[in-house]
Image (cartoon, rainbow, N blue to C red; front, side):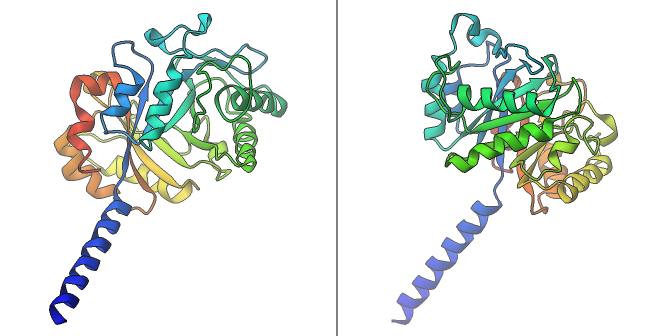
Length: 298
């Protein structure tokens, strides 16, 4: 009887330990779509490295423009050639991976001219990529998990309106996840106002191409200070550390694997809002093997 009890207690303790470890574990988010040589979306999800995949990008929308996706060499939206991604999206989701449409990007033609313009864009996104209905859905009948705001240009107006309109669709029974990729200087010049709505689930902050708040060799202070701002002042479910997946992926801000695992992650994982790491991008991750090298430390 005593032996059985000891075994039972040991089993319960191990289950609790596993639950705690799983709870603390972070995810890796990846951007896919801007290089035709980065493998298919299905192959990306089959690696087992990623919890989120951002389809990049929808760079043209707003102010009465006809919205248009751009997935580089993967497919041609002008000939309705991206509908074959539907099965890939579903295969990712079947593995528990959330697939987001990233709107904006570093080189796009986008801005919102009014609250009503934001409402029209939300309607378009809902009907063409989320749970709504349209005769010309670019990805076929696949229903994406949400919208990623990678706003790096245009104006800083009405992104909060767009977030509210999109979030409103969650009331229909289909959760619309909202994510964002702001720059690390706090608050972000483009979506800082929108993030104050508290409607964003995951925020992957770009800690690169921004020397004042990114990591430099053996100096974690700037990054750590910015991280504290983001995790204490932004009402989001989880905050991610956004990094280039290789030195070639950005002008600055790459963190060697050894530095990330020995210095940076231990300094930021204590935050209750720590969610993991975001990488730009799948193509560069293929070249460096970065996600595979860090995933057991996330």
